[in-house]
Amino acid sequence: MDIVSILVMNGPNLSRLGKREPEIYGNRTLDDINKELADAFTGVSLDFFQSEEEGELLEKLFHCEDHGGYSGVILNAGALTHYSIALRDAISAISIPVIEVHLSNIYAREEFRRTSVISEVCSGVISGFGANSYHLAVHGLTGMLEIE
Ligand code: DQA
Image (cartoon, rainbow, N blue to C red; front, side):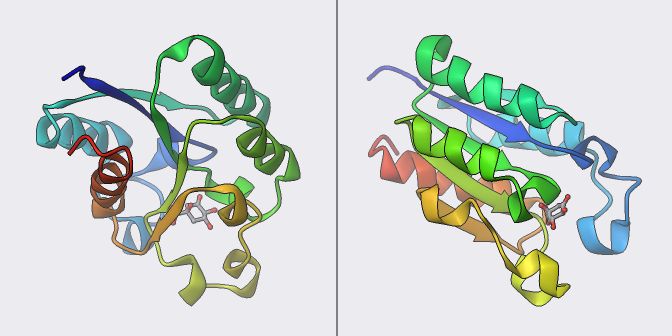
């Protein structure tokens, strides 16, 4: 069976994990989380991308669709989740599945975080399991792609 490729994307401020509000987001850095994911899923090819810029995330999604050879994307869009119609439209514009991920439970936080403008166009949503949210997302996505 061909090895499946998944892109794990993180948006604004997620480069600060480990230092940023550890009581909410935990002590692991994004590098720690990415390494643990790669170690846990040796049968899946995982690539990682993080940007503070909305436009770069959009371009990466389009690149994935057109040239990337990825079967799906796991996306923690950070605060863009709550207001970026451009990101929502980009997810709608591509055909590969995108799984929305959050470390914190956005539905148990401030009111403005309880709205996700991207959930409706994502294939699944995982929120509130800390770093484990990414692991659950890889499980869910590989299951969805029927390659687990
Ligand atoms: C987050 C939740 C968002 O509300 C916040 O803006 C983030 C991180 C999470 O992973 O819990 O940057 O996406």
